[in-house]
Amino acid sequence: MCSSCTDFQKKFVSLGCSAFLILLAIALGVLWPSMSEQVLHNKLVIKNGSSNYDNWIRTPIPMYLEVYFFNWTNPDELKTNQSAKPHFVEMGPYTFSEVHERVNLVWNDNNTVTYEQRRIWHFVPELSKGTLDDEVTNLNVITLVSTGWKR
Image 1: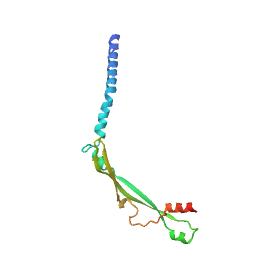
Image 2: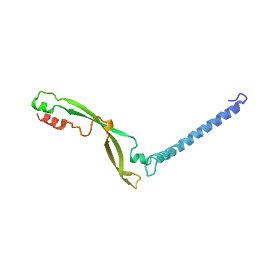
Image 3: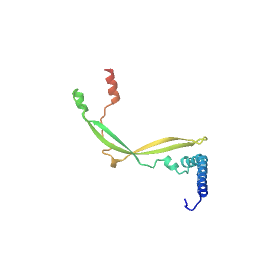
């Protein structure tokens, strides 16, 4: 503060600043809930033409699904030799781009929306190690487990 001010002036300025901060805190305490609710309502409500609507209808972020298989390479050997061990080779990744769309929108009277979500996968050969024509021999785990329980 100033060195040439009297004690009364210093106390008056301190009291004025304190009163201003208290009034500001009370005003923010009263107004903050309605201000934050209005901001959330404007930003989060999904309606045709809003800023989030197009991003919600069709996700703009590229998503990829990578699938790996374990190919059973010696199934015929196990048919003839029960003591042989199965041999598996990992195949993949088979990469698919994934798109999420929301379709059949119904805008309800209670400010909600009902929709169906459609997921679409497209094979991406340049990110895959293999093609969709690759043959894979797999164990049927459900059958294997159920026959094991019967024994």
